[in-house]
Structure formats: structure tokens, C-alpha cells
Picture (spheres, rainbow, N blue to C red):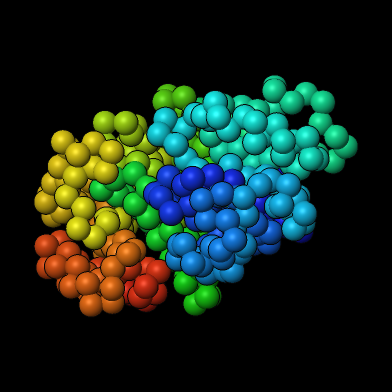
Amino acid sequence: MLERSQKLAIYVEGELAGPSAKMGSGILRYSPNEVAAVIDSTFAGQDVREVIDSPRSVPVVATIAEAKALGADVFVLGVAPPGGHIPEEWFSAIDEAIGLGMSLVNGLHDQLNPRYPNLKPGQWIWDIRIEPEGLGTANGDSARLKNKRLLLIGTDMAIGKMTAGLEIYRGARDKGVRTEFIATGQIGITIMGKGIPLDAVRVDYAGGAVEREVLSVAYADLVIVEGQGALLHPGSTANLPLLRGTCPTHLILCHRAGQEHLLRLPDIKIPPLRDYIKLYEDLGEVCGTFPRPATVAVALNTAGLSADEAKAEIDAVSKESGLPTADPIRDGVEVFLQALGI
């Protein structure tokens, strides 16, 4: 499996500047592994910082062979296409990487281990989206814990829930708070080295999978659970298991500045934020059955805006929601830590 000493090549062919490259962007921002190269022939010859907002400088190359020559040990599929399946046109690149002796991180639904039964010594394939063993149904046990449990919720997919969660995780730990982050998607699992691929878990066991993870870190004063999808998104079934498994004490809403509808489904409008927040809290509480979670802040994704534009959007969302609002990347996380009483 992935060792921290191994160097990565992130494959985002044709997508580096787009929202589908969220796996690659997340690894660039948070992975402790060195990234030897990003592979995208569209931007070959540039530094990744010339194309996207990245905290590290990494060369963009056109070919897998170039990435290998730069010392890459592991080939990472860095794009999350709609539906989470591997496009047919990617297989020639995957075949080449395997042929060059590189190991592979695959966060998509299609498993690749069966395709490559004869790997070289030391070579491996990490198919992340495999259901963990020994799962059962949830029992509501998380509600009896005495710690703070923060669940990140959103108005769309790929809107910054993992990013906000990891930034708050870092900030809380820097303050000396016993904090754990529960990854529930391919990017978070790759970064943390553990977690649950929630969209690969059968629906009956999804809440139980989340609950098991929450209970396993019950010693922490703050447990941060990475959100998935969005309650209003027709393609998302993750939110109810996340609410039941976490029994959250706190929620932070993640939203993209200026977004009024789902990106991939423009006919589906995002409702007023106050109404949307109340719906999440009502579902979390279930008419008083569980403790009511408190939505304490909004994490606003202002990528691509100027400083003045971002401030105007943050002020507008804060007024609309009635909650403290900030961009965790642009502004830091002090607003969120204060809202959580840290």
C-alpha cells in the first residue's frame, strides 16, 4: 500500500483546470507524499501553480514516461468523472503506467486488481472503493458520546466539504485539541491512509460504517466527519447515513459563491440557505428523537474571485444565512474554530 516515501504522478489528462480534477487537487494540497509530476498534455511545460491554486510547485508533463523519469513511483487517477467509472480511453495510460513498474491508486468504482494479476515484486494496486468487512447496521450509539461531532454538509457535490474539514482538522490540532478526521471518500482516504469509501458501502450498512468509525475515535474531543454529496442532489444517497452514523452535534454548510443551481443539473435550484440548513437540522433531530445539531457557520468556496469579490460574496452569504462565513483557504479557519467553541 502507499508509503509516505513514495513519489506520486497525478493523472488528470485534459482536466487539470476543471472541477473534475478534485482528486488531483486534493492530493496536491494535502497529501504528505511528494508529487513528482502532474500529467496533462494540455498544460505540459508549465508549473501546476500557473494553472490552478496549488500550495506546492509541481511540473506538468505530457507523458507517463516523463513522470517516471522525474522519479514517480505511484500513478494516481486524479479525475473523478461523472458516475465514478474509468473512461475507456484511460486504459492505455493505465496499462503504460503498470508496464513501467508503477503502482496505482484508483479511487473510482471499477476495480483494477483483476485486470493486472501479474504485478512485479513490490508493485501494487490500491482499489479504494471496496466495502470494508464486518459491517452492520447503525444503532444510534454516537448520540451517547460526550464529544463534539462535526459533519460537513453541502449544497452540491465537489463543493469543498473535504477541504473545509481538513483545514478545520489542521487548525484544531494546531491549538492542541484532540481531533480526528474521518474520511468518507476516495480523496480523503488517500490523504489520511484510512477511512470508509461510503459510496461503495451497501445502503443498509452505510450508517453502521459511519457509526463504527465515529465510535473508534470516541476519545477525541472533536471528531470531524467528511461530508458527501448533497441532500438536494438526486444522485446522492449519503446524507442520511452520515447523519445517523455521526449523530452530529455541529454542522458546517459548504457552498460555492454565486452558485444558484446544481452544476451538472441546472434545472435543480439551490433553495434559500436558511431553509436548507433548517432541513438538515430537522432531519438530524427527527422530531426530538436525537439531539438537534447546530449549524454554526458557512464555508464558502470563493475560488476564482478577486479579494474584493470574495469579501462581497462572504458578506452576502453571511447575511442570507445568519451565520459567520469564511473561505477556509483564503481566510483560514479561526472563524470556524470560534463557532465550534475552540
